[in-house]
Image (cartoon, rainbow, N blue to C red):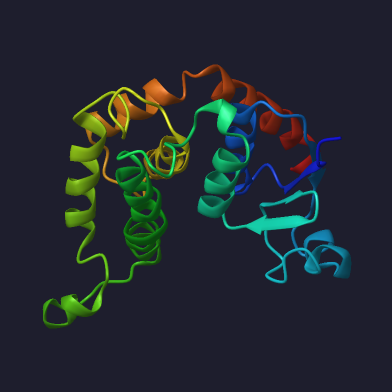
Length: 208
């Protein structure tokens, strides 16, 4: 019997990234919707994620939090979905690169811009991502050279990094460049992405 897969989320959260990944994987899962400030901070859920944040998944006895980790875990747990290169594949390197480029420089630079945080020129070397412009320039090149981050192969890295770009464009926290819009439109046209959005959007009225 396969291990049960449980997904903890809220439709107005990064849980949308994990939802998309789950739909790409194509395995049955149970959804548990939590509320901010109440069930998300309840002892039952804090035992799963002590941060009291979503998303999280539980696969059998294994708990995974943090969106990048969830995407990477699901891709490896269900290799039949073809969402990650094999460990011996040379594409594994760029796959990891873009997953963690999104989790590191992209996340930090976008958050700092949203908060109005700026860095003095003489302290720039202390900032891991350098500047938002440098991050966006690298990002633009990565998503415009080929159909996907790994060339012609869609992967979990596209789910994760593509979600960051999509939200950046939607909320104005990322410069609107044509290459970004084209890439996001391309990956969000996938059937799994459409299903994920429909599922989360259907939860929105009850959560409003």
